[in-house]
Image (cartoon, rainbow, N blue to C red; front, side, top):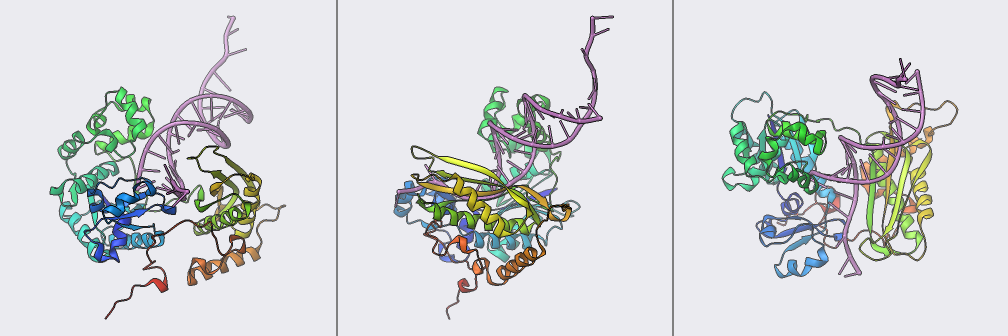
Length: 417
DNA sequence: TCTGGGGTCCTAGGACCC
DNA sequence: TCTGGGGTCCTAGGACCC
């Protein structure tokens, strides 16, 4: 058996941890650049605040209902996610962190009553982290998703749902549209309609071979999973990323090259941090730059660029990204977004060095290790490339950002006596 | 003024290999 | 008369996830 633990309105709940005055009140969290709503507390949902709606279109609605607004604060959310994960380790030795707010737990060989266990997990996360969660328990990941959904939607479940017998999941699947199933969105649902598959139960009882012909092998696996036969294993060791991207819209549009190059240097440096964290080297970059797709005369350009040798030296990567974006830039356009991707990555441990071409120098390795050490000790912003600029007027908008309560010394909450 | 960011997997088709 | 079989690698595009 597997459990899926999914945090309720995760970002909004993170904000409420350090603002208990906002419990039971409408709260929303905006995407990067304060673009649109990505999380809503239960109360905000009840007010009819739509999800994924541009902020500027619904700002009046939020003000009118006195909704508290936050910009997203990823250092805080990442840290809270780690704390939830740590709490869950007491319940299983094998955990897959599926996303920032979802974790799968292997419960195989666990004795006792799964409903009881589910409630213990839920209470324990609330007790330790003050994060409300739903717990779904079932024989496969896809069914655990279904169970989790039910745990949250059906009041009688009280946040915990166990699907340990076929008749239980049959009852739920008959009442669930096929788009409620993990891996099935609009396009696929449209194709399934032609096979007269409308509900999750229709899919579970469909002929797997015929369904596969209409899409691909994943959907055939989904059918197996919906029948309680697991096809998807638990990935408790996250595989290394095959691509690493850092892309971001500018807080202020730019028609000149310099701010764009500064932004791209920052994105390159963020990407190198992730690259080094998984001990990889990059050989090929992908850089792009574009204007707003919501306005006329949309302009977009991208290019791949080769590093001279496999590297994780931020200076080389940032310099190449800056040169590449300069080659994409044309005057007379209002650019709103750029990005740096590492599209070819090697594992440092398995990398074969070239006998004739020199690779990255030992001095580079040492310098990068020193930068890492400084950042670990004093925070990410303690040392950076001059190419990133200092005033950074292009930096994303975060008008409503909360403090980094748990990850920055100066932001630690004070208790008034 | 104003619409995110970061990924993964699959398939089809072509080129190429022995 | 008659023209194999098995495979890899790459790319573009589509679809999905949170």
